[in-house]
Image 1 (cartoon, rainbow, N blue to C red):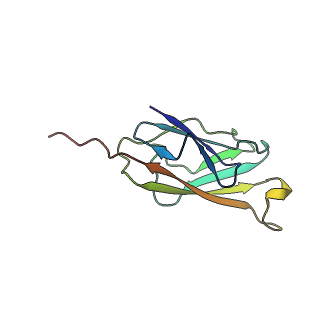
Image 2 (tube, rainbow, N blue to C red):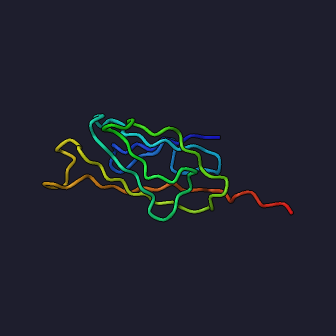
Length: 118
């Protein structure tokens, strides 16, 4: 099983080693180099491939990274897009007064779920 780390501090969002996963792999979202006072919410926009649906809260009163989240053994082979809203970000990251840093990304499940044997 592999683990990918999704760094929300970079523009665009970065993935190590990449955004591709298989069923049973794990995914960790992290604030990366952002201060721990920064808060981020990750929400999947078209269904999730993870066993815990979210949304996922990072920073502020929450941890700066999620625990490893498992890709479901029933996740279909396709991209799973997500949106990120970052609040309390350093001033250089804000788009305008009162606005938040918004990003999007995705996780790509690259294999089909196992076939059911009858």
